[in-house]
Image (tube, rainbow over all chains, first blue to last red; front, side, top):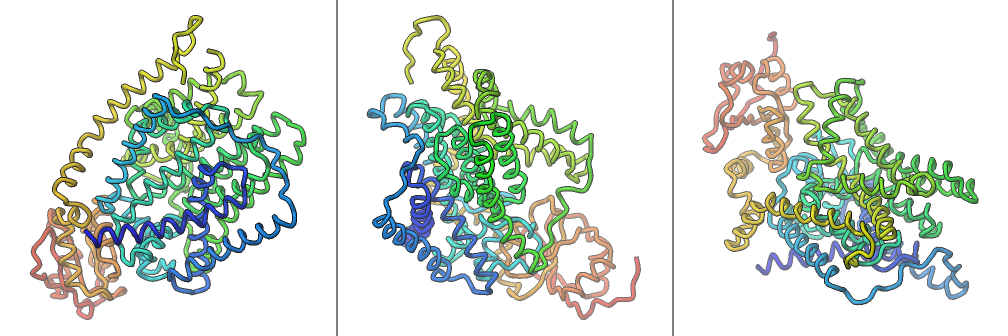
Length: 458
Length: 170
């Protein structure tokens, strides 16, 4: 028992390192965010900085040790903190022109407590489910968890001697390796505590964004609960060691904050943070680059369609997320090139129209299957109908373009997937829920817009 | 969320419908997860978690025995279908041993090439597989692979790559 407690304490220190580092960086970058938002965003930024630094260590042929992994990023954060503190004394900070976050709500009512209780039960379940069971799911032991074990045991990003989609980006494996460094061993059940924590950060991020859309605390909390407890897909990813939860988190951070910026809910000072979320997208999964590009395209098209004041300047601001995309993409591509890691061709070999046609009903069925996502997607469709008047006249267009564009991208991805006709339905079953999972929090934002409209009309 | 009765027809009706459907969905979710919940409760009660969960799997116990037999610097060949999902477990648990995979029905040419090229010292096959394929049969006929006495859910053979000679064709 004492040993288990010690392991938990060591893991907590490792997680606190990630969170603390990220929190300081986000706090320095975007002081106008609430503490809750800074903590939620800080978790992702901390993982991004630490794992990219670990990749840099391997490029420099330096082995992973706690000191080498932690000292430089912590020094950077401390330097930033101290530097801005000193500069801030000399030069007063430019006031943030963005609207302030919604005022604090009155004490929690019955509905608030109901939603908080539902979320508490969910997190009790997924936390126990994560830490009591070792890694067992396919991709966890075939890819993400396996690489984490290899990197930890070899003290480096060393992919020699095996083939486990070696060209995939390594944010999740490196984060697990970093936690193994803290644990001093490969303990693949205790380490999974990071996934419920990541889920909590995702929900906090969503809650903060819904508040910035103008929803009161209770509707925002209700909608966050609605998102979390609709179907088993998200719940399952809160306790298995896949990269999809991290990917979903970064996708929400990038698309959600960009949307709020388009709406004028935050100032342009949020853009460096958005850039880091874009980096997280491309550094966590192979399909991150097209997804990040789809967010950028949706934002550019929305600006061009709506033609807001200072259009050219606002379009130029999109260089930030583009830079973030490259920050997440290039280091790993350069590392892979310099180490002879070939990008797999298992994703694109040709165009198969029959697969495209088969994927259409499969996608529709997945969207309405209550086991996968409950009533989330039908409610998002309803919200789109409710917000239809705003669809072509406000930045809600961005949400519609992002979701619609990615549905089409999913169908096209299936059309080029090189699977045999006998296995295609299995391929769909194994991947479709995850692809929709990445988009689901953005659907929750669309529901937020619909709910706002509904509450206004009522 | 103010759910007071509407002052004019229609308000919140849609929201209430969605909330009722969500409530039904929560019941469906609870049903879907009830087996997981029961197992979780049982494990909490009996204090069987972590490594103890793995120990319940005979294949894992056999792999643990294998890891005591196969030295960490060795290379082994696993004969299986990737889709069975067992070789990925073997690779995960037997790391840092170098892992190779071939189909059970591999011909002698391919198998011998792999054994020679990678200096394979052990060959693993799971229980429930059909009789040895042509590659393994040829290896056994050659006397280059000898079964080890390691009872479990599969069979492990010691391979002597020096005895694997070339000069053969399918």
